[in-house]
Length: 322
Image 1: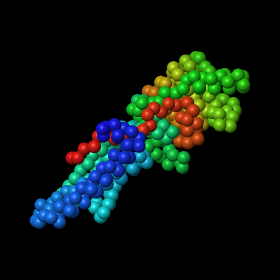
Image 2: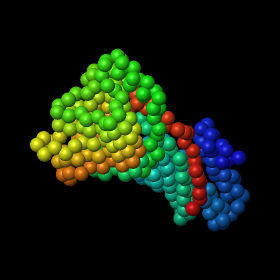
Image 3: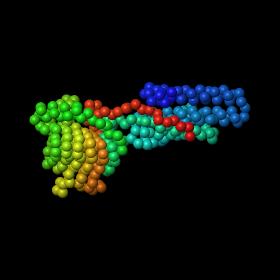
Image 4: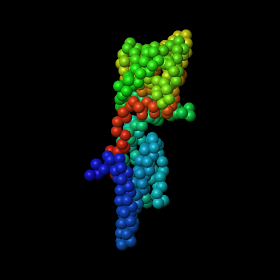
């Protein structure tokens, strides 16, 4: 019964509320029994229940923080004057451990909760099914924020049919190739595609699809919109003469790798997001800036229209008294 309840979105909070009510009831019963008993047994029983209550309340606080994206952090929570130390630890991209410890007059209670917290893909500036090496994410205020980075994650599938249809419509309207076989290279200060903006029209992104081949950026080139690489990799080429600071204003989705090469990197100036079904990595100078700057409007347009994020319902996987 409880397993069914906790996997239901409404039931998720019902379980938390039920446990709090149960603990409060137990606290009241402990107080009642304490008034009917004498000596240390009554006091110990009351302390056990009070410690249980504090730990449960601490878990509730930790779960709320995890729901707000706050993990790998420790807090001190207070309820009815009882202190509980709460630690949230991210186990992987979608699982969080909440550990609450309380102590009342030497009586300790530890509760461990493991919860499934689906990834909010509209908040993933760098996403990889494998590893991410030497790339960092930055928020819209320019602050480094690797909570916007997910690696070893199940990258969501995109709606190829919808993307292809949009690319073909834009190709027919502009006379500019949007669907490529054999790869696409953007170089020598080229700005691609037209219009030179993330948006093709109001509320409609530019879409470019590379069905077979690699997507390459080099020599101060600038790309706009959504780039989908179906069979190939995304590469920033080595250039011995130029510093190779290419820019992408939009979203790159590669069903292979994303590779940056050279003394500087294509990732130095990505405004939007980059996802790869495999790995994201770089070569070249260790001092080169591998930066992806999150832009909410670009990523939200991509996720809302073309991405299937899967089940987005949080659930409690396990609840243990340690």
